[in-house]
Image (cartoon, rainbow, N blue to C red; front, side):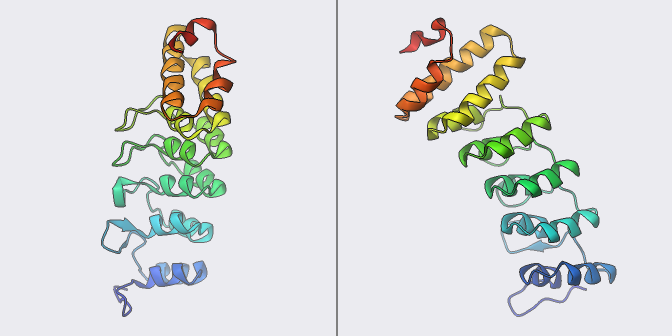
Length: 208
């Protein structure tokens, strides 16, 4: 089952690109490798299914015991890709099958960082229900909350700040709030700064 087409694609990749999970199941039953690499950047079939939002094919791969935490290009997992694409049902499927909500890619980003970047409240809530850590910093030293504040996504930043305030000591959450406000200000997100500052105690606002 190692045959490839003229474009160098394995049979399972062809089935995926044609939207044929039924064909994929037949190929797998005949010995096709569900962990087959695709392209030249280190991705595998599960990453392609995640990027393209193909929930049927993702289900087939998970049934075939493909690891939901397999690393691909930029050391991203399938959960990174479905989060960036806002494919909530696929994110839930991956998490229910053991995907790591705190997997860190080559930029230091977790799926929660990407969910904040694309302003996906529903996926953020899903990740938090699966115990995602909102305090992890990427290589810019930004947490997902900083990403939201920098982009002007006020509701996301507020949700994540409230989450951290509920689980951290007061002095830690106050310092985090100061840094988040500073990032919003540095990125010119004055409406976000104003909306967040309205709900914070006066000592936090000493930076402005």
